[in-house]
Structures are given as structure tokens and as C-alpha cells.
Length: 195
Image (cartoon, rainbow, N blue to C red):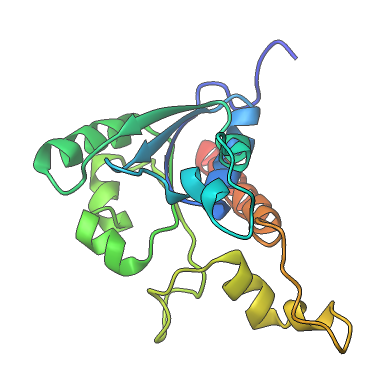
């Protein structure tokens, strides 16, 4: 294919671990210009997942590279005004903004929808959380093992009666969920282009 389906679409990926980044990875596969924004220091903690037990420590985090392929990277300190202004400059030229930060972090960084939308009325804002937007658990991190495997009972249901709960491979819930997010973003882009 000579022309990528999402060529000319700019995406700001301000998400960590797998769920959010995997959805923008699919967009990058189809030609979108995806800019992954990370904080100074360790950046996306998923960069270091290959060093965490039970996985054997290695020199390269291939999992991180897989979910962040074809993306450009940018480090911004969102706690200082210069970092925020740089992000707003990106927002003004973006089509999509993706995040998986919990509400308290969105508020601290001032990147909630109502704070970004005035800078770009055509911006599609895609936010995902592990436990929804209401209730006592909205600020809990939604990791695969807890939000997907443990809460649904899958850890227990796929083991034999005398065995420990199953240890899932990383991303087994995140990747299918990321495809749903990708689909939602595509529908929003389609609707935006038709209205």
C-alpha cells in the first residue's frame, strides 16, 4: 500500500504500560504519527518491566519495544510550565490524545479533557482506566493481573484444583482491550470527519 490509511493523523500517546500504548501502536502501524510523551527520569515504567521477577532480567525490554514501535518519543516535565506549554503546542496540532492515567494524576498534570479541548476543538480524547470513572477505586492502577485476571476470576478458573492461581503472561488482557480502544478511536475519527 503506497498510502497509509492513517497518514496525516497525529496522536499524542501519554499513556504507560500496555493498554493505552498498544492502542496507539496499532495506529502507528497504519501510518499515524504517534508521539509518545514520557516524564523525566524513568519515563514509562514499562521500559523496565524486563527486570522485574518472575521474568529473567535482560538488557533489552522487547515487550516495551513491541508496544511502542513506530513512535517518536518526547520527554516533558509536566510539573513545570515550560513542559505544559510544550504539550499544549502538540495538542494544538494533534488529532488524538490517549492517556491511561487515573483521575488524580490527570488533575495534577492538568491534562483532563476540559483542560485540553479549549486548545483544539477537534481533538479526540481517549482515556482508559482499570476500574472506571466512578467509585472508590477510580485511582487504583489497573494492571492486567489485578484488574483483568484476578477480578474476573480467570486466575482461578484456568488452574487445576490443587494448583496455585495461574500466572498470566503480560498483556493478555491489555492487548484485547487495546484493540477495543483502537476501535473506539477509529469510530471517533470517522464521526469527526463526517460532521
